[in-house]
Figure 1 (cartoon, rainbow over the protein chains, first blue to last red):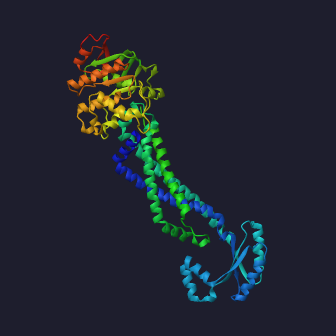
Figure 2: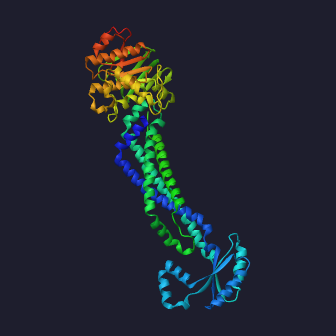
Figure 3: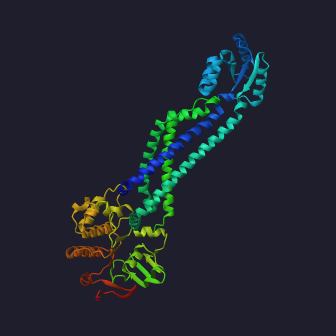
Length: 293
Length: 236
């Protein structure tokens, strides 16, 4: 009872700093969660990029029969899982989505300039040697002008993405550290403003854990409020965030990034957990730093 | 509970001692008045025994536990000591009930009373007993401390000090803000608690109390023990 009352009294007396801490924490953790979610997704996606398992095969004839014949031959090559013709409409839609200027320029020139192409997908367990042999076999097919191997094209991009993922993770940790410092300041301030009460309960034999307990009750309330606020912001901005990420990384052929229920739940748990961890560690650090008789 | 001070000196600033080579042995169940002029060192002496301050030199011990910075045993010992501070140290924004109940939440309850649970079950009766023992009505329990008069606040502080039935009660000017009747209500209570075995250490300016109660009296002057009157016969 004492601990609950002390926590409630503390929150009432520190209403403005508490609200500021919640708002600041929400902003930091929303950014951390948004970046963290994306980094997590990026790390997981690297091995599943469709482009990494595929190759674009350009045909040097605009004749539909030549394209279909090339498809039949390519399908017969060992090491090809599936292959399909990329229609003009599909190609133009792709251009329209990712390269609008180029799409407009090509549309004004007519259909004949649109390249005829196949999309070939290799099995997931294909090693680089077998893949190279398969690509050579496809290149040898009559009417095949050029084969653009997705894995070669993506090599550098994947490395960059990996570093972006690490960078995003590091940025999340950095934002959490800022929150930790904010919380540390908050608890050091309590040590100062509530010095009389702390001294008093200490004189009745209160342990440091007993001093910490009302703070932690306050911390749970603050963390849950922070988490709730972050989730509302994240939910409100999920379409914007998804579009933002996909705008930059939509051209390399992966399934579009989106915040689904599972990632949302993960973000919610992570935010509350990060907020609580920041509060608990900051409370302990403040107690360790504070000189309490 | 036995209190021992051996060659204790205390200074807050270099070259100015507030206590100088104080020796004191207080046995279990004893009643001791500490008297002296303002600045004689009464409050400092009491703070050394509560562990709020530490001696600059010498030994301060309760039940053979030395009071030293960072001593884990000291915390357990504090739970056996009730303190009435000169400035009351009440939490002004809390109710009387919440103030009086505070010591119950930090461990040991003494002399035959059960410790209360985390949520305070069992505290209500103990708080009511303590508040009526100091001559206050239970009607004040829901009032916040800032609504009370100085005398009422002082009695709330005394109720808080005795609620846990400590082995040693240390009171610094516990009747300073009380009128004659309430002063004697409190002194009667202290004597009753002392008869039940509680060791008492009371700092006071009130000559009338010392004259009538006639207990061991320690006279402090400029930080030194001038007289340790074991019979309480020597009136300053």
